[in-house]
Image (cartoon, rainbow, N blue to C red; front, side, top):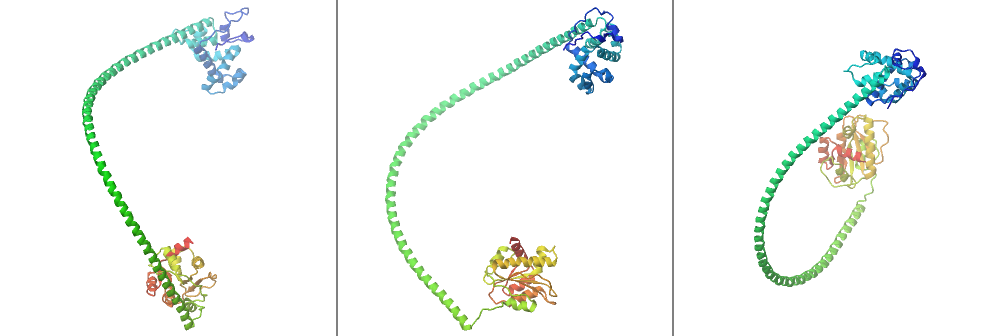
Length: 466
């Protein structure tokens, strides 16, 4: 962008640079237009001005540049270039203040430019930038000479670039020729290999032709043999059809015989079912007659209630369910099977179960949790449930036991294990009694009396599932 300098009334300011600038000019001479600056010179002028902006007093900086003066050094010349160029062109006083500081920083080179001369070894761009700012006698010639030098350097750079590109193209062409030679060698080798393979293929084709003729001859022989075998197969199929018809006739006869046998078996089963029904009816009538003969009335108390009367003041339990005998196990499914037996009686070693399942609680909380869980089992199964705790004295203040659950405490001098064995011995032979305890002595003792011992884990898992 060209920097222009219109005529301004401030040209009479007394500055050393102004004196040098205005030495050859008179007030009658009209101002000349601003020269067109080469781009490197314009950029250097803006850079020099941006460098000295922060050093000027606030009232010496034009208003449009005060915000630019606060920018960082690298952003000041880049973002404020248009505003700086405009102020240097339009405000001679501002340009004079900038020139004074730039010349002071330039040293001997600045003094030489002010005198209208420039060292031969000096950078032409720097000389042109200082000449534009200081504007000594002949400054336009310095700028033109600098522009010519810059253009010459640019032309030299262009020529050098063209030479470098030509050398690169020559190098690439040489490389391409070398690659082409290598590719040609490869193609010649490939052609020789293809010719060799073609000869082999021709030989293989001749061999395949001979093999084809031999195969066609064998195919004709096989066709003749196939026709012969088809005739034999047709005869065999006819024989097989005849045999199939005979087999179907025999199958029809067998199915008729089986139908007769099924009818006979059904009649025999009906006779057996009639006999079984008569036998069961006879047994039922005999049981009713025996109960009437013995004059047996329904009982109000169960065997465990008699033991409870001696060891605790707990009400009797409700009737219970049944199952078949099983091995000692901790499987809750086994416990479910046993509780499904008719008139089953569940006896629980209380503290043995609670200390194993939730021993972190207090004894009162353990008892409450176990009794509550057993109440749920009694409600679900309808079985008689008795839980036994060790206790030298009866514990007062217990909450009422759930329906169907009997709570017993052993007396002083007797353990819960002994009370459990007494409960088991009190039951009639044949009644399913399930004892929950992980104590091996308890398990062995009740097993001898016909009870089903199960580990405490079986009940704990059953309670967790509920």
